[in-house]
Image 1 (cartoon, rainbow, N blue to C red):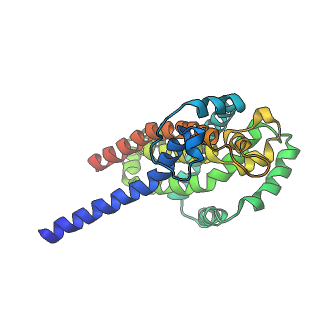
Image 2 (image 1 turned 180 degrees about the vertical axis):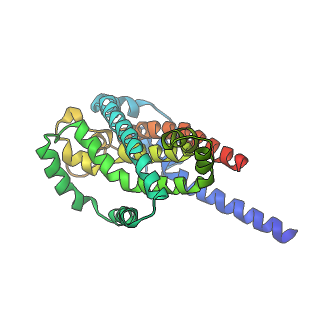
Image 3 (image 1 turned 30 degrees about the horizontal axis):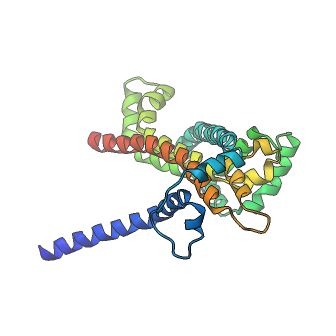
Amino acid sequence: MRSSAAARAGRYAALLAYLVFLAFPFLWLLSTAFKPPRELASPHPTWIPRDPTLANFRQALDEQPLLRAAFTSLATALGAAVITVLIATPMAYVMARYRGRLTKAATGWVVVSQAFPFVLLIIPLFLVLKELRLIDSVPGLVAVYVVWSLPFALWMLAGYVRAVPVELEEAAAVDGAGRARTLVSVTAPLLAPGIAATALFAFVTAWNEFFFALVLLKTPEKQTLPVVLTHFIGAEGVADLGPLAAAASLATLPSLAVFALVQRRITGGVLAGAVKG
C-alpha cells in the first residue's frame, strides 16, 4: 500500500512539475506585461508586479496596428484551417482504407516532407505564387499554410480513420447505404474529434507562423500579428519589453480561446467513442 501511494504521489508530483514547466513562460509573460518600467529595469525581478499597470497595453495598442494585424491573422488562420480540413479528410480516408502502392508512396511522402526546412520550401513557393500573382496577398499566404499543414494533417487524420471499425461501414453497406451515405452518416461523425484536432493544429500553425508571413507579405497593412510584434524591437535589437510583453499576451488569447472550444469537442468525442465501444 505504501509503495502504491508513493508511486501515485510521484506521478502527481511529476505531472505538477510538467504543468509548471509549461505554464511558466506564459505566466512570466503576463507578469511582465503588467509591470511598470521601473520594475522591468530592476535588477531584482519579482513574480508578481508590485504596482501593476495597464500602461503597457495602451502603449502597445497606440504604437502598432495590433487589431488590424490580429484580424489578418485570424482570417488567415481560419481560412487555412477550413481548407486543410476539407482537403485532408477525404484524402486521409483514402490513405487509410485503400492499401496499395500509391497510398504507401503517398504515406511515405507525407512522412519525408515533414523533414523539409522552411528555407528549402520558400523559393519554389515564392516562384509559384509569383506566377499566380498571389505575392503580397492573404489568399497566397493561406495557400502556403495549407501546403505546409497538409502533410501532418493527413498523417494525423489517417490515424483517426484507421481507428474507426471497418465493420461499421460494412454493416451500413449491408443495410443498403451507399458509399457516400456511409461516409456522411457513419464515418464522419466518428471522425469529429480527429477533424477538430486537425483544424486546431492548422489554426495554431497559421496563427503563430512568422517566416512565410515575413517573406510573402510586404505591405504593412497586410502584415500578420507575429510580424507586427517584431516592430517592438529596435534596429539595434533592444526591445521595448513592457509593450512587447503586453502585445504578445494579447496575441496568445485567440489561440487559447480556440483551443478551449475545440478541446471540449475532442474530449467529448473521445469519451463518446469509448462509451460506444
